[in-house]
Length: 68
Image 1 (tube, one colour):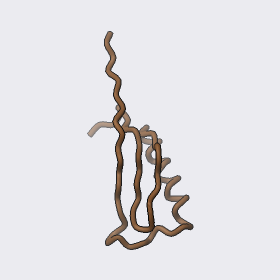
Image 2 (cartoon, one colour):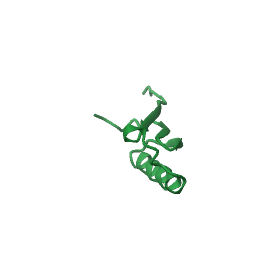
Image 3 (spheres, helix red, strand yellow):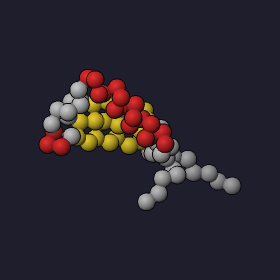
Image 4 (tube, one colour):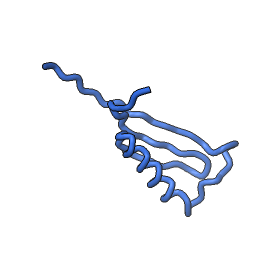
């Protein structure tokens, strides 16, 4: 039986409202860990999570189990 294999990398970028610099150094590590947990819960393995004071970047592998 043939198999189809794929890897879809997704780069998500989102910001705080009105780009307000809300994400300070005390919050960053907790926020990155929280977002990584959400990705893992959706079976979208996070590769890199980071960002700056006013936005977040997430690079992850898209799960083939996700549907609309």
